[in-house]
Length: 299
Image 1 (spheres, rainbow, N blue to C red):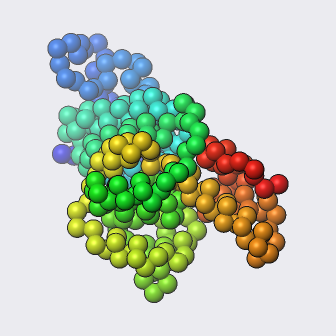
Image 2: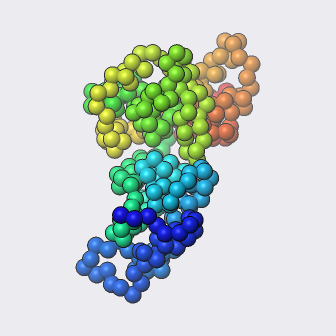
Image 3: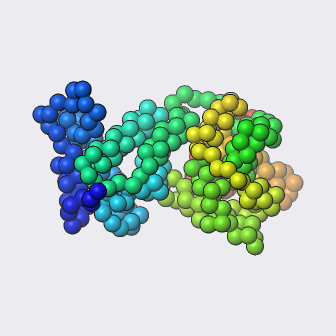
């Protein structure tokens, strides 16, 4: 396997498109993933340019094809697919995956595992907002988490950690499989978790020692798709724990005001919860709360 030719990424993009181009050649009765139409050419050109811009923004150096690793592609898709409808996200992932096949068929080295694209499709479908769902917070989280532990120990850990931190699925999975990369065991503080768009979460302090011990005790990791299947069996999605985190954090801050332990305004509370969730606007918290089915909001 070889690398793309060219001294810069724009030249490498041109090289990639030339290698994959098969205009005028029929793909009938073949499994060809090469470019046989102008529409496919433009789509792959778009994907390559968008991935290139992402690597430049992140200051990631190297031949464009060598940058197509599991980590880089996963982070890029987190950024690209945010707020896309499920079918649009799926089409984008399938197009990227087919392009990877075509590059490999043309002797270009690409290391990304195809399961990355499949998992992103499942995540997009799991968190699809095209169908408005209400009451997104988990009404009986302890019972659900216990059920998930019974299904797979790692599923229980993932759900419990999501409820504790508000992390998304990909972020929670990264933490449970690489705990020591992010955990300061002297203070039980989690730092350095990267969210969508490359935004780093503020530190999550005072993580319960019992939860840390349970993460340490994982002896078999499951895939994200297995976790999502376990959640589906409980009638929820991974994002529902994020709604629950928002609701709980909001209500806790309200309780502090009512007990005289805080002088935050309502807008201050909304902003604080938003920051905890790696957003930066009060209206994002309002959106989550509206879907969590909260009543009698503090004004």
